[in-house]
Amino acid sequence: MTTLRLSMAIVLTGVLAVAACRGDAHGNPPGASEAPAAESGTTPFTVSVATPTLKAGASADAKVTVTPATGYHWNLEYPAKLVFEGSPSKVALTKKEFNQLSGDFQASETKADIAVALQGKDPGKETLKGELKFSVCNDTTCLIKSAPVELAVVVSP
Image 1 (cartoon, rainbow, N blue to C red):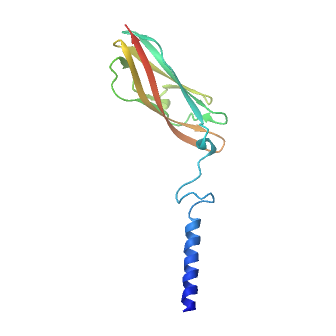
Image 2: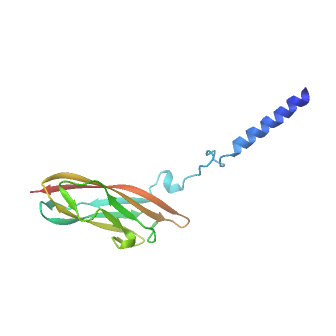
Image 3: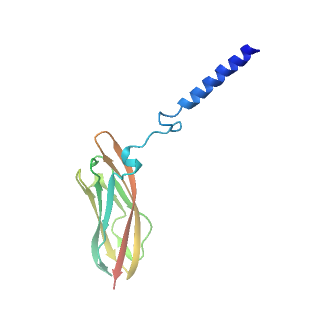
């Protein structure tokens, strides 16, 4: 009977040891990995938007700029893309999808600019919403990122 108890104790200890070792050394659950430092509090990029003043019937460009944080650079080889959704009523977009590899981005390792051509249709306010997918890299890794883009446009008469 003591042999049975000893065997059960050894098996139970082994099961507990295996379960404890399934995560990484920091206690992350199985399949998880520790996020890079930039992911844990510091954003590895900033997105800024410059929206023009528009008059009904007139055209102007909005500008979306992505600036990598210190220690990161823009990935010129990644097929970055900005896509606007929906059908705006007060503003016309001459193009809804912008692709880096098609030449729609003015990019260097220090920043990327996307000129978004707009035409005022009807007076009023409208927010154009899109999603930007891109990559920034540091010395050890490249991060695939996504960021919402909102252009708050005012069209005057």
